[in-house]
Length: 583
Image 1: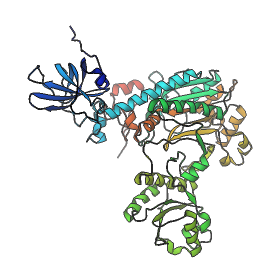
Image 2 (image 1 turned 90 degrees about the vertical axis):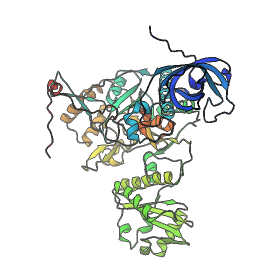
Image 3 (image 1 turned 30 degrees about the vertical axis):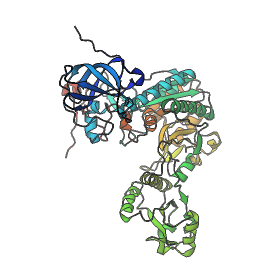
Image 4 (image 1 turned 180 degrees about the horizontal axis):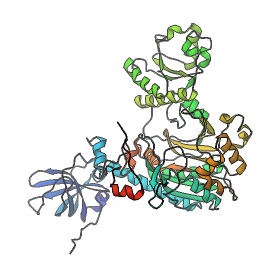
């Protein structure tokens, strides 16, 4: 007969209200202290930790070691000395029965809020890492967000619809993960980068309000806030203006912050244009919890003898107060490594010390230029200016923006436990590809241009803006979307500007374009990145902290070692042969 596990309470839920009660708990041994006739065990389950007092000369006690699973029955007593670091720190259980449920190997690292293990080891033994209370808390937060999404969207008339995982390959900005077809050898499905085209067809179908907690797959280079497989709270609506839609989404954001972490988000959210975000903050996802704004200083160098600045189309700078003494040569070399990522040779550093400008390039400035810099930046003793110059505005802006973010972290300019939530709107419709120089869509070819720019589509395409928007939280793009093209004439114009032939259109997404010919309503939507939203609320900067079994930066699952080789028989069945690269 199967032995029943006795449990009346969860460990972390016990309190002074339970004094003198006999309770049964079950959990893992977090810590053991053996004092001879007395043994203290910290028992952990998903709700928290409770201290257990075991009088070893009074009851039978099995062998107890860290991470063994115990079922303990006993009376709740008040401690003589409370532990303020524990939610249950005022009480303990005096055990009357200790049952060993299962043993455990010695863990490869300390399982506690703070651990000594490197991330590689923690990810390899992720099932142990997830026992740590701080990580468990992250997943409770994630689950609450999903629950609120269902509640809010259901209450606002949305219909939850699942879309296919096995789909055709379509151009959406990243590489597809391909799935070979056994039945149709030589042909492939693609795992969806997003449900974008399917959800637009649901609008054609007349669903009006759709949502889905959707898995998405993108084969792209990884970083701290990116994974190859991730989750979106995916949303699409019909017949709403951009203002109406953003207002609806703001209600969801406000509800999430209040109910999950009890933070009040004031509505309406601030909206800043893409141009302001990039020109003032150096990012299309600006963190505005600190200052360090970009300042345009090109006009100060129009007549300069310093050829590097005189010939540059764009020159901008940021001021860091009271940093001159700490801005060492070694630090400047580190900053310059960041500059090179944005195709900038370096940042020019000028200090203001003893009421004068100091730096290797200052000797090239006349008095008018020096005074102009002092006045433009309102320089005070010990201030520093970082300057970037170049002929590509994006590189200058984003290069200084990245430095701005690094300096804010280094100098602790961000107040802890603060939340900065805003919309970035009015993105350009097109951009020039750095690789080919060709015109490409900033988002996708079905993004709707703003009505007032329609007459500039063919003549000034790079000056055309779109009905697009990103929601930015603490410097992370937590979601984004836009209104979609719904009339065939505009769609045809966009295709021509992008250089798509009729054959290209039919081959890449002809099935979708066909659907738009059957009475497409005005529609638009967005997707919240569930992991990034959870990251912000959990105040972590690593997306792997909010994914149960994440991939590492090499796109490998450390627990399972996926991707792995498969048998030749499996490949033969799919009509696939592996061709090894020659050395």
